Image 1: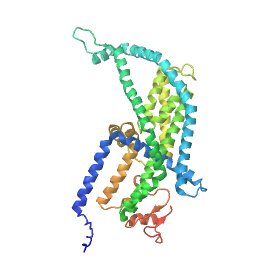
Image 2: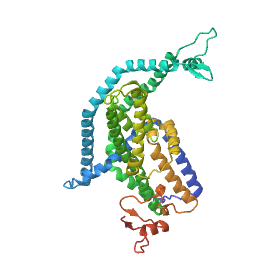
Image 3: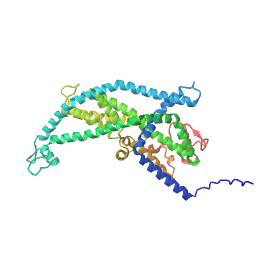
Image 4: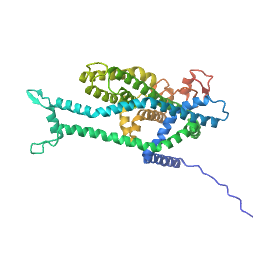
Length: 430
Protein backbone atom coordinates (compact mmCIF):
# COMPACT_ATOMS: atom_id res chain seq x y z
CA UNK A 1 0.00 0.00 0.00
CA UNK A 2 1.43 3.35 -0.97
CA UNK A 3 2.19 5.76 1.81
CA UNK A 4 -0.03 8.85 1.92
CA UNK A 5 1.45 12.05 0.55
CA UNK A 6 2.81 14.33 3.25
CA UNK A 7 1.14 17.73 3.24
CA UNK A 8 3.62 20.51 2.64
CA UNK A 9 3.62 23.34 5.17
CA UNK A 10 5.07 26.85 5.18
CA UNK A 11 5.70 28.10 8.71
CA UNK A 12 5.49 31.87 9.27
CA UNK A 13 8.65 33.84 9.86
CA UNK A 14 9.43 35.23 13.25
CA UNK A 15 9.64 39.04 13.65
CA UNK A 16 13.43 38.75 13.97
CA UNK A 17 13.66 36.80 10.68
CA UNK A 18 11.43 39.33 8.93
CA UNK A 19 13.62 42.25 10.07
CA UNK A 20 16.80 40.43 9.06
CA UNK A 21 15.46 39.55 5.58
CA UNK A 22 14.14 43.09 5.11
CA UNK A 23 17.53 44.63 5.99
CA UNK A 24 19.42 42.22 3.73
CA UNK A 25 17.01 42.91 0.85
CA UNK A 26 17.31 46.67 1.34
CA UNK A 27 21.10 46.44 1.40
CA UNK A 28 21.10 44.35 -1.77
CA UNK A 29 18.87 46.87 -3.54
CA UNK A 30 21.06 49.82 -2.49
CA UNK A 31 24.22 47.97 -3.57
CA UNK A 32 22.66 47.07 -6.93
CA UNK A 33 21.53 50.65 -7.55
CA UNK A 34 25.00 52.10 -6.97
CA UNK A 35 26.83 49.19 -8.59
CA UNK A 36 25.04 49.59 -11.91
CA UNK A 37 25.87 53.31 -11.99
CA UNK A 38 25.34 54.87 -15.42
CA UNK A 39 23.38 51.84 -16.62
CA UNK A 40 20.38 53.37 -14.87
CA UNK A 41 20.45 56.50 -17.06
CA UNK A 42 18.40 55.07 -19.99
CA UNK A 43 15.88 53.65 -17.52
CA UNK A 44 15.49 56.97 -15.70
CA UNK A 45 15.18 58.90 -18.96
CA UNK A 46 12.57 56.44 -20.26
CA UNK A 47 10.55 56.75 -17.04
CA UNK A 48 10.67 60.56 -17.07
CA UNK A 49 9.76 60.92 -20.75
CA UNK A 50 6.98 58.38 -20.40
CA UNK A 51 5.66 60.26 -17.39
CA UNK A 52 5.56 63.45 -19.42
CA UNK A 53 3.82 61.83 -22.40
CA UNK A 54 1.26 59.65 -20.60
CA UNK A 55 -1.37 62.47 -20.44
CA UNK A 56 -1.07 62.85 -24.22
CA UNK A 57 -1.47 59.07 -24.65
CA UNK A 58 -4.57 59.14 -22.45
CA UNK A 59 -6.03 62.02 -24.44
CA UNK A 60 -5.46 60.28 -27.78
CA UNK A 61 -6.96 57.07 -26.38
CA UNK A 62 -10.13 58.97 -25.49
CA UNK A 63 -10.40 60.02 -29.15
CA UNK A 64 -10.43 56.39 -30.34
CA UNK A 65 -13.70 54.99 -28.89
CA UNK A 66 -14.41 53.13 -32.13
CA UNK A 67 -11.64 50.61 -31.29
CA UNK A 68 -13.45 48.16 -28.98
CA UNK A 69 -10.53 46.36 -27.32
CA UNK A 70 -8.63 48.34 -24.72
CA UNK A 71 -5.24 46.71 -25.39
CA UNK A 72 -5.02 47.52 -29.13
CA UNK A 73 -6.54 50.96 -28.49
CA UNK A 74 -3.81 51.75 -25.95
CA UNK A 75 -1.04 50.46 -28.24
CA UNK A 76 -2.32 52.54 -31.17
CA UNK A 77 -2.47 55.60 -28.89
CA UNK A 78 1.17 55.09 -27.93
CA UNK A 79 2.24 54.79 -31.58
CA UNK A 80 0.26 57.91 -32.49
CA UNK A 81 1.92 59.76 -29.59
CA UNK A 82 5.35 58.74 -30.88
CA UNK A 83 4.38 59.89 -34.38
CA UNK A 84 3.07 63.23 -33.11
CA UNK A 85 6.14 63.92 -30.98
CA UNK A 86 8.54 62.94 -33.78
CA UNK A 87 6.64 65.18 -36.20
CA UNK A 88 6.74 68.17 -33.84
CA UNK A 89 10.43 67.67 -33.10
CA UNK A 90 11.25 67.29 -36.81
CA UNK A 91 9.33 70.40 -37.83
CA UNK A 92 10.89 72.38 -34.98
CA UNK A 93 14.30 71.17 -36.05
CA UNK A 94 13.70 72.17 -39.66
CA UNK A 95 12.64 75.65 -38.55
CA UNK A 96 15.10 76.30 -35.72
CA UNK A 97 18.21 74.20 -36.35
CA UNK A 98 19.25 75.94 -39.63
CA UNK A 99 19.00 79.34 -37.96
CA UNK A 100 20.97 78.16 -34.94
CA UNK A 101 23.54 76.50 -37.20
CA UNK A 102 24.03 79.71 -39.15
CA UNK A 103 24.50 81.73 -35.99
CA UNK A 104 26.88 79.15 -34.51
CA UNK A 105 28.90 79.11 -37.72
CA UNK A 106 29.02 82.90 -37.66
CA UNK A 107 30.16 82.78 -34.05
CA UNK A 108 32.86 80.20 -34.88
CA UNK A 109 34.08 82.28 -37.81
CA UNK A 110 34.25 85.41 -35.67
CA UNK A 111 35.72 83.67 -32.61
CA UNK A 112 39.43 84.09 -33.50
CA UNK A 113 39.02 87.81 -34.08
CA UNK A 114 36.89 88.17 -30.94
CA UNK A 115 39.44 86.30 -28.83
CA UNK A 116 42.30 88.43 -30.18
CA UNK A 117 40.39 91.65 -29.49
CA UNK A 118 39.36 90.46 -26.06
CA UNK A 119 42.90 89.42 -25.19
CA UNK A 120 44.22 92.82 -26.36
CA UNK A 121 41.59 94.66 -24.31
CA UNK A 122 42.32 92.57 -21.23
CA UNK A 123 46.06 93.07 -21.57
CA UNK A 124 45.59 96.84 -22.01
CA UNK A 125 43.39 96.97 -18.94
CA UNK A 126 45.77 94.98 -16.76
CA UNK A 127 48.81 96.82 -18.11
CA UNK A 128 47.47 100.24 -17.07
CA UNK A 129 49.23 101.37 -13.84
CA UNK A 130 47.02 101.94 -10.79
CA UNK A 131 48.09 104.39 -8.09
CA UNK A 132 47.47 103.11 -4.57
CA UNK A 133 48.83 105.13 -1.65
CA UNK A 134 51.40 106.88 -3.79
CA UNK A 135 52.65 103.63 -5.27
CA UNK A 136 52.05 102.47 -8.82
CA UNK A 137 50.76 98.92 -9.29
CA UNK A 138 50.52 97.08 -12.61
CA UNK A 139 47.96 94.29 -12.37
CA UNK A 140 49.52 92.22 -15.16
CA UNK A 141 52.84 92.05 -13.27
CA UNK A 142 51.05 90.99 -10.10
CA UNK A 143 49.13 88.26 -11.93
CA UNK A 144 52.23 86.99 -13.71
CA UNK A 145 54.10 86.85 -10.41
CA UNK A 146 51.25 84.89 -8.87
CA UNK A 147 50.84 82.34 -11.66
CA UNK A 148 54.49 82.26 -12.81
CA UNK A 149 57.02 83.15 -10.13
CA UNK A 150 60.58 84.06 -11.02
CA UNK A 151 62.80 81.23 -12.16
CA UNK A 152 65.61 82.51 -9.96
CA UNK A 153 67.39 84.49 -12.66
CA UNK A 154 64.81 87.27 -12.88
CA UNK A 155 62.93 85.78 -15.88
CA UNK A 156 59.26 84.83 -15.92
CA UNK A 157 58.12 81.29 -16.61
CA UNK A 158 55.18 82.57 -18.71
CA UNK A 159 53.24 85.68 -19.54
CA UNK A 160 49.60 86.64 -19.18
CA UNK A 161 48.82 85.53 -22.74
CA UNK A 162 49.84 81.98 -21.84
CA UNK A 163 47.65 82.12 -18.76
CA UNK A 164 44.64 83.18 -20.85
CA UNK A 165 45.31 80.46 -23.43
CA UNK A 166 45.60 77.86 -20.68
CA UNK A 167 42.29 78.99 -19.19
CA UNK A 168 40.54 78.74 -22.57
CA UNK A 169 42.00 75.26 -23.12
CA UNK A 170 40.84 74.19 -19.67
CA UNK A 171 37.31 75.27 -20.56
CA UNK A 172 37.32 73.42 -23.88
CA UNK A 173 38.26 70.05 -22.36
CA UNK A 174 34.96 69.60 -20.42
CA UNK A 175 33.05 70.68 -23.53
CA UNK A 176 34.75 67.96 -25.58
CA UNK A 177 33.96 65.41 -22.87
CA UNK A 178 30.31 66.47 -22.94
CA UNK A 179 30.14 65.95 -26.72
CA UNK A 180 31.65 62.50 -26.32
CA UNK A 181 29.08 61.65 -23.65
CA UNK A 182 26.24 62.76 -25.91
CA UNK A 183 27.52 60.52 -28.69
CA UNK A 184 27.65 57.55 -26.34
CA UNK A 185 23.99 58.01 -25.38
CA UNK A 186 22.94 57.38 -28.98
CA UNK A 187 23.65 53.67 -28.47
CA UNK A 188 20.94 53.45 -25.79
CA UNK A 189 18.28 55.40 -27.71
CA UNK A 190 16.61 52.31 -29.16
CA UNK A 191 16.33 50.65 -25.74
CA UNK A 192 14.96 53.87 -24.28
CA UNK A 193 12.24 54.06 -26.92
CA UNK A 194 11.25 50.43 -26.37
CA UNK A 195 11.06 50.96 -22.60
CA UNK A 196 8.99 54.10 -23.15
CA UNK A 197 6.53 52.11 -25.28
CA UNK A 198 5.89 49.55 -22.54
CA UNK A 199 5.76 52.17 -19.80
CA UNK A 200 3.20 54.29 -21.64
CA UNK A 201 1.17 51.23 -22.64
CA UNK A 202 1.17 49.39 -19.31
CA UNK A 203 2.23 52.09 -16.82
CA UNK A 204 -1.00 51.95 -14.81
CA UNK A 205 -0.57 48.20 -14.34
CA UNK A 206 2.75 48.80 -12.55
CA UNK A 207 1.05 51.15 -10.09
CA UNK A 208 -1.81 48.71 -9.52
CA UNK A 209 0.69 45.89 -8.92
CA UNK A 210 2.57 47.93 -6.32
CA UNK A 211 -0.74 48.89 -4.72
CA UNK A 212 -1.67 45.22 -4.30
CA UNK A 213 1.58 44.55 -2.44
CA UNK A 214 0.95 47.38 0.01
CA UNK A 215 -0.72 46.19 3.25
CA UNK A 216 -4.43 46.97 3.24
CA UNK A 217 -4.27 49.34 6.20
CA UNK A 218 -1.62 51.44 4.42
CA UNK A 219 -3.17 51.57 0.95
CA UNK A 220 -4.78 54.92 1.79
CA UNK A 221 -1.39 56.33 2.80
CA UNK A 222 0.16 54.92 -0.37
CA UNK A 223 -2.40 56.55 -2.65
CA UNK A 224 -2.20 59.89 -0.88
CA UNK A 225 1.61 59.86 -1.00
CA UNK A 226 1.43 58.87 -4.67
CA UNK A 227 -0.89 61.80 -5.35
CA UNK A 228 1.45 64.22 -3.58
CA UNK A 229 4.45 62.87 -5.46
CA UNK A 230 2.52 63.33 -8.68
CA UNK A 231 2.01 66.99 -7.79
CA UNK A 232 5.74 67.43 -7.17
CA UNK A 233 6.89 65.84 -10.41
CA UNK A 234 4.08 67.38 -12.46
CA UNK A 235 4.92 70.81 -11.14
CA UNK A 236 8.60 70.36 -11.90
CA UNK A 237 8.74 68.68 -15.30
CA UNK A 238 5.64 69.85 -17.14
CA UNK A 239 5.90 73.24 -15.45
CA UNK A 240 9.62 73.44 -16.11
CA UNK A 241 9.13 72.75 -19.80
CA UNK A 242 6.64 75.63 -20.06
CA UNK A 243 8.89 77.86 -17.95
CA UNK A 244 11.93 77.09 -20.09
CA UNK A 245 9.99 77.85 -23.26
CA UNK A 246 8.77 81.17 -21.83
CA UNK A 247 12.22 82.23 -20.60
CA UNK A 248 13.84 81.24 -23.90
CA UNK A 249 11.36 83.31 -25.92
CA UNK A 250 11.71 86.34 -23.61
CA UNK A 251 15.50 86.14 -23.79
CA UNK A 252 15.41 85.90 -27.59
CA UNK A 253 13.12 88.95 -27.82
CA UNK A 254 15.22 90.96 -25.37
CA UNK A 255 18.50 90.07 -27.11
CA UNK A 256 17.02 90.96 -30.49
CA UNK A 257 15.76 94.33 -29.27
CA UNK A 258 19.13 95.22 -27.74
CA UNK A 259 20.97 94.05 -30.86
CA UNK A 260 23.06 91.31 -29.28
CA UNK A 261 24.74 88.87 -31.68
CA UNK A 262 23.31 85.33 -31.91
CA UNK A 263 19.96 86.05 -30.16
CA UNK A 264 18.61 82.62 -31.11
CA UNK A 265 21.55 80.89 -29.47
CA UNK A 266 21.17 83.05 -26.36
CA UNK A 267 17.46 82.25 -26.15
CA UNK A 268 18.05 78.53 -26.60
CA UNK A 269 20.82 78.58 -23.99
CA UNK A 270 18.58 80.43 -21.50
CA UNK A 271 15.79 77.89 -22.03
CA UNK A 272 18.09 74.89 -21.54
CA UNK A 273 19.85 76.31 -18.47
CA UNK A 274 16.47 77.04 -16.89
CA UNK A 275 16.45 73.35 -15.89
CA UNK A 276 19.31 74.08 -13.47
CA UNK A 277 17.54 75.58 -10.43
CA UNK A 278 18.77 78.96 -9.14
CA UNK A 279 22.07 78.84 -11.05
CA UNK A 280 20.75 78.44 -14.60
CA UNK A 281 19.48 82.01 -15.19
CA UNK A 282 22.76 83.52 -13.95
CA UNK A 283 24.85 81.17 -16.09
CA UNK A 284 22.82 82.03 -19.20
CA UNK A 285 23.66 85.73 -18.73
CA UNK A 286 27.44 85.21 -18.90
CA UNK A 287 27.80 84.72 -22.71
CA UNK A 288 25.40 87.61 -23.37
CA UNK A 289 27.52 89.96 -21.23
CA UNK A 290 30.69 88.79 -22.98
CA UNK A 291 29.09 89.42 -26.37
CA UNK A 292 28.14 92.93 -25.25
CA UNK A 293 31.71 93.67 -24.09
CA UNK A 294 33.33 92.76 -27.41
CA UNK A 295 30.68 93.87 -29.91
CA UNK A 296 28.48 96.79 -30.85
CA UNK A 297 24.70 96.75 -30.75
CA UNK A 298 23.14 95.88 -34.10
CA UNK A 299 20.00 97.94 -33.38
CA UNK A 300 21.24 100.89 -31.26
CA UNK A 301 24.13 102.77 -32.93
CA UNK A 302 27.07 103.58 -30.68
CA UNK A 303 26.04 101.20 -27.89
CA UNK A 304 29.04 99.02 -27.03
CA UNK A 305 31.58 98.14 -24.39
CA UNK A 306 30.92 98.42 -20.66
CA UNK A 307 27.71 100.45 -21.09
CA UNK A 308 26.29 97.80 -23.41
CA UNK A 309 27.26 95.06 -20.95
CA UNK A 310 25.58 96.87 -18.05
CA UNK A 311 22.37 97.25 -20.06
CA UNK A 312 22.46 93.52 -20.88
CA UNK A 313 22.93 92.71 -17.19
CA UNK A 314 19.92 94.91 -16.41
CA UNK A 315 17.87 93.07 -19.04
CA UNK A 316 18.64 89.68 -17.48
CA UNK A 317 17.88 91.01 -14.00
CA UNK A 318 14.49 92.26 -15.20
CA UNK A 319 13.75 88.94 -16.91
CA UNK A 320 14.69 86.97 -13.79
CA UNK A 321 12.44 89.14 -11.62
CA UNK A 322 9.54 88.79 -14.07
CA UNK A 323 10.09 85.04 -13.99
CA UNK A 324 10.20 84.92 -10.17
CA UNK A 325 7.20 87.20 -9.61
CA UNK A 326 4.81 86.23 -12.41
CA UNK A 327 5.84 82.95 -14.09
CA UNK A 328 7.09 80.68 -11.29
CA UNK A 329 4.08 81.09 -8.94
CA UNK A 330 1.63 80.48 -11.80
CA UNK A 331 3.50 77.65 -13.53
CA UNK A 332 5.33 75.79 -10.77
CA UNK A 333 3.22 76.88 -7.81
CA UNK A 334 4.37 76.08 -4.27
CA UNK A 335 4.60 72.31 -4.60
CA UNK A 336 8.39 72.14 -4.28
CA UNK A 337 8.72 74.88 -1.66
CA UNK A 338 12.48 74.38 -1.22
CA UNK A 339 14.88 76.97 0.16
CA UNK A 340 17.54 78.05 -2.39
CA UNK A 341 20.32 76.88 -0.05
CA UNK A 342 18.82 73.39 0.08
CA UNK A 343 18.53 73.34 -3.72
CA UNK A 344 22.18 74.39 -4.16
CA UNK A 345 23.35 71.64 -1.80
CA UNK A 346 21.17 69.15 -3.67
CA UNK A 347 22.71 70.27 -6.98
CA UNK A 348 26.23 69.64 -5.62
CA UNK A 349 25.28 66.17 -4.38
CA UNK A 350 23.33 65.38 -7.56
CA UNK A 351 26.25 66.39 -9.77
CA UNK A 352 28.56 64.18 -7.73
CA UNK A 353 26.27 61.14 -7.95
CA UNK A 354 24.70 61.37 -11.42
CA UNK A 355 26.38 64.22 -13.30
CA UNK A 356 24.19 66.49 -15.43
CA UNK A 357 21.11 64.31 -14.83
CA UNK A 358 21.64 64.69 -11.09
CA UNK A 359 21.72 68.48 -11.48
CA UNK A 360 18.43 68.48 -13.41
CA UNK A 361 16.68 66.12 -10.96
CA UNK A 362 18.10 67.71 -7.79
CA UNK A 363 15.01 69.77 -6.90
CA UNK A 364 12.21 67.18 -7.40
CA UNK A 365 14.26 64.37 -5.83
CA UNK A 366 14.92 66.55 -2.77
CA UNK A 367 11.21 67.40 -2.50
CA UNK A 368 10.39 63.69 -2.80
CA UNK A 369 12.87 62.71 -0.08
CA UNK A 370 11.49 65.46 2.15
CA UNK A 371 7.95 64.12 1.76
CA UNK A 372 9.05 60.55 2.53
CA UNK A 373 11.10 61.73 5.53
CA UNK A 374 8.12 63.69 6.88
CA UNK A 375 5.89 60.64 6.50
CA UNK A 376 8.39 58.41 8.37
CA UNK A 377 8.79 61.08 11.06
CA UNK A 378 5.01 61.28 11.53
CA UNK A 379 4.80 57.51 11.97
CA UNK A 380 7.71 57.40 14.40
CA UNK A 381 6.18 60.04 16.66
CA UNK A 382 2.50 59.16 16.12
CA UNK A 383 1.15 62.37 14.66
CA UNK A 384 -1.01 62.70 11.56
CA UNK A 385 0.94 64.16 8.66
CA UNK A 386 -2.13 64.22 6.41
CA UNK A 387 -4.12 66.45 8.76
CA UNK A 388 -1.95 69.45 7.72
CA UNK A 389 -3.72 69.79 4.40
CA UNK A 390 -3.48 73.56 4.32
CA UNK A 391 0.33 73.71 4.46
CA UNK A 392 2.04 74.13 1.05
CA UNK A 393 4.78 71.61 1.81
CA UNK A 394 2.40 68.81 2.74
CA UNK A 395 -0.80 69.50 0.84
CA UNK A 396 -2.03 66.06 -0.16
CA UNK A 397 -5.21 66.71 -2.10
CA UNK A 398 -4.40 66.20 -5.75
CA UNK A 399 -6.69 66.71 -8.77
CA UNK A 400 -9.12 63.90 -9.35
CA UNK A 401 -10.70 61.44 -6.92
CA UNK A 402 -9.21 61.18 -3.44
CA UNK A 403 -9.50 58.17 -1.15
CA UNK A 404 -10.36 58.72 2.50
CA UNK A 405 -8.37 55.91 4.12
CA UNK A 406 -9.41 54.05 7.22
CA UNK A 407 -7.71 54.92 10.53
CA UNK A 408 -6.99 58.49 9.40
CA UNK A 409 -9.61 60.43 11.42
CA UNK A 410 -7.96 63.83 11.07
CA UNK A 411 -7.61 63.55 7.31
CA UNK A 412 -11.07 62.06 6.90
CA UNK A 413 -12.60 64.88 8.93
CA UNK A 414 -10.80 67.53 6.90
CA UNK A 415 -11.83 65.95 3.62
CA UNK A 416 -15.43 65.53 4.68
CA UNK A 417 -15.59 69.13 5.79
CA UNK A 418 -17.63 68.03 8.78
CA UNK A 419 -20.02 65.98 6.64
CA UNK A 420 -20.89 62.78 8.58
CA UNK A 421 -22.49 61.22 5.49
CA UNK A 422 -19.08 60.40 3.97
CA UNK A 423 -17.75 57.16 5.39
CA UNK A 424 -14.18 55.90 5.70
CA UNK A 425 -12.78 54.28 2.56
CA UNK A 426 -15.24 56.12 0.29
CA UNK A 427 -14.13 57.74 -2.97
CA UNK A 428 -14.98 61.43 -2.99
CA UNK A 429 -14.59 64.12 -5.63
CA UNK A 430 -12.98 67.43 -4.78
